[in-house]
Length: 582
Image (cartoon, rainbow, N blue to C red; front, side, top):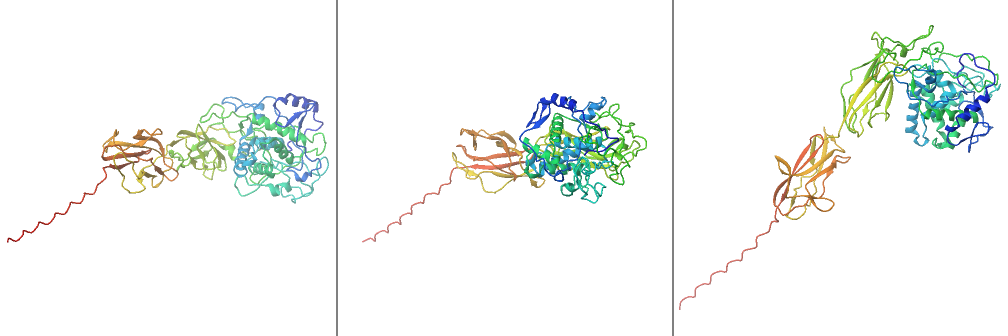
């Protein structure tokens, strides 16, 4: 099912050697898989129907590459100054292809969280199906430089599937062929196809579209891929073969141990195929340009380059003066011509915790002479100890440069972690020095505090205040939620020291407390203080509330003896009249 590149190796696969290799790798078997006496992996608890129609699978049960993972576990990304060896290329995944897998995982995490699709599964299938799109021979949009076609499914050594698309996808009007980096047959792509790169098309030759389609295909029927049984069923639905299942499982295990990004076009091309012993299709199928703008044929593998040191340039990193070599007779892609990245006017990046950065990062791809390069995929990656994300909810974003060579990242969204973090900008599929941008998250703040009621706050000595103090915090007119605050009963307006007499709060033990810390406004910006009490001191007292950001409010509290009504004065009795004298 994978691409037919050059002359296919024919003859029987050395099954004895393969069995020995598999046995040697048995220590790292996937869950739900055992090894038989011959060293072959056998999946338990999941037996597909041997009569399942080929047309019901993603690939039509087409042939696939059978190369096993290297015996040595994958290493982290090679450090700057280290040559990318063939082994590193085998363990690495081309940048654009890896980006497509991770975007598909993120999309499925949002739309089908119960599926638990790992991007490493897409990478395993992509490796087996097409050698990661022929080692990453794709343009900046993720479209293969030439179509990847499986053999005719004409019943000669393969399934027999007559044409279903009038050759629209595979160029064959007699029989169907598996198409693209994830090798969908046309009839499956017709309903499973997705637009993964947002260009309004569903193209099986585009790795973003194909990866997203494969993810949805594997997540149908409510399968939970974190469960070994469902994982096996999903893989077998892609290609109904126990050997295929075992091989994909092996690559899945391998990639889960760690992998790294390598430049597009530098991946190792697989050699052995499951149909080598069949003897069918002895000559490669002709390939066609994937789009009018693509080169006429697949590029030869580019010379390996050394990954750039993040944020800087190292000798041999493909930076200034080191254009990516292009084999004679081929047309360089726009990505090949990029020499460096330039800042495109990004201002200071600052936001409050929980808010959105008003400034967006903008970078421009340029040639050595400073000419803008359009249609180049630029990756923005958030690094450092932070919970900040892009507005997409992800830590990375890949954006195509426009006609001016500029790529603008999605808006940054601050989390609750305060402090600085870095956004690194690199060119996908090209090893040139990146750009680092520092972003700062400040604590939540308020610039205004106001009481929610104007009721007087009064109390008698030794009593309790009937009204609780409630305030609302705002910042630039908007609700200021989750803002830290303190409340202190102070001595005077010009003396913020804590008062030692007058009103007080109570702690958990009922003891007087005149300073409260650790307060926060709620989601509506409201803060209601605990009940206030009064000692025997009368007078007017002050409560000062302060928030992060400098907002303060001083509230008057009055403690006075209850007013008593004066007792009525008795009426004077009228004087007695003198008796008339006799």
